[in-house]
Amino acid sequence: MSIAQSIEQEIVSRASEWPGVVVAEKRTGATEFRLGEEDFGHIDDDGSLDLPLSTPMRVALVDAGRTEPHPVYRRTGWTTFRIDGEDDVDEAERLLRLAYVFYAFKTARRTGDSSLIVDLDVDEELAFCGAEDAVREAMLAVVD
Image 1 (cartoon, one colour):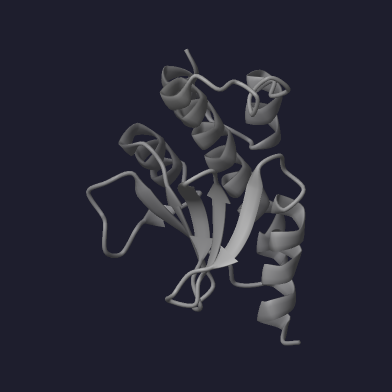
Image 2 (cartoon, helix red, strand yellow):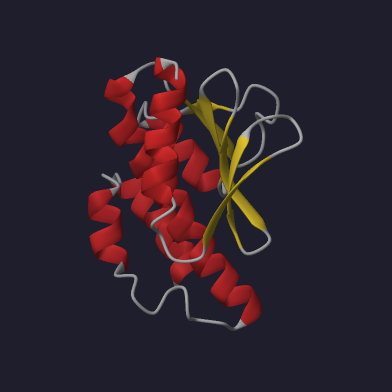
């Protein structure tokens, strides 16, 4: 197993423990993280973690220097974090967890099923994710 594969496997292992998460391979070869029918993030073959968030969340993360605009979908909520080595695993987990919480609340709002969010403490999750004030505000717009 290459270093890149072991790094990806570590992220997959961590995210697989979260309630409702399904990890699958996309037809492009990317490793996809799903919550219900939603792709809340994926790791491309080049080691980039792509996250489909709201535009305000993407702007806040980019402004904080934590992510970059997605190279293709620059004017959307998509954002990218480059996983260059083992030192990036914890930040990748925090960003992926942020997307997970975002999609858990978004899904609960859309479907009326609160089973995924019943045990989520938003303040605790945002603290774990290292959410800056602007990220917190953007998340709370979805949660409230």
